[in-house]
Length: 395
Image 1 (cartoon, helix red, strand yellow):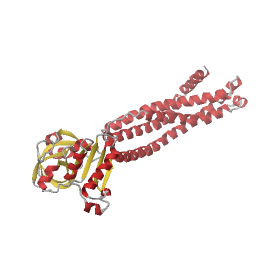
Image 2 (spheres, rainbow, N blue to C red):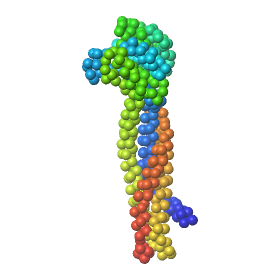
Image 3 (cartoon, one colour):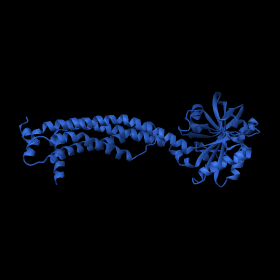
Image 4 (spheres, rainbow, N blue to C red):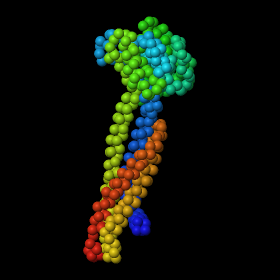
């Protein structure tokens, strides 16, 4: 009953000073809203950048030569023969894809542009998750036809609309390649404006007379997470034994490790920005303390009367703390809603996928409550210690 009465008195006091209450709330709302918005935008951006790669991250790794040692490059090289060996030996445990990187001048509708060419196996898109087909379709297994995949940026640049590029031809090394599909890619892997084409690996071997059939990287998607590390080790050992070289000639890199590193960087960056935004929340807390000190001074005579009729110091302390908590809690609640709206607006304008991350609201509200208690404790304690006789004489 005592708490209920104290809460009622706190609300009446806040209503009696509407302008002062409103101005105090503004500081809290801006502080909480800024923190919530930044955390939500940061989490949405993180999910938008790497979210689609997390699904297979614990099952995907890359295998290539360790170029840090020049002798390794001279002793061994990766080729189609190695792909066949790994596919045959580990067909029930993993999918194996490969890529060969090159750079050529490509003619688009009489316009020449320097373009990165990635020659890949037919299962490359399923294994690596590097891109998604937007228009058209990927080539069939084992094809050696002169077909090409281009990204949306190039398609829109030279053919007006991405979908209209299907069926047109581009010239690579004086040889026409038919555009079979247009793909979209994640900014974490590759910029959407970067000039990059994908062609069938066997077709690239054919037109360039690459009889040794080289590859630069092998991509492996294990069918189970349980044997991931074991399979990495076994594949390296298999290649090393087949070529008669040491296992250190080859190096593997797990996608999960890359994602963990990027996750940590993004979280640290978000935390730093949130800390800066949190300064406004601290300023709001100082504003609450200032307002409560003014309130104590204004109500000194009231405190004296309450003490004279039997109110104990803990009752006075309780009243002012509850007033502070009501003020900061209300500001925290409105601030969370303000931050949510701001985050929604920014993600929409930036064409990002919005992620609702509820711990952000819980953490922000708890921090606001703690700041409220700390801000209101000194004024409340000061009010509780006032001498009733001196308080009654106060004008």
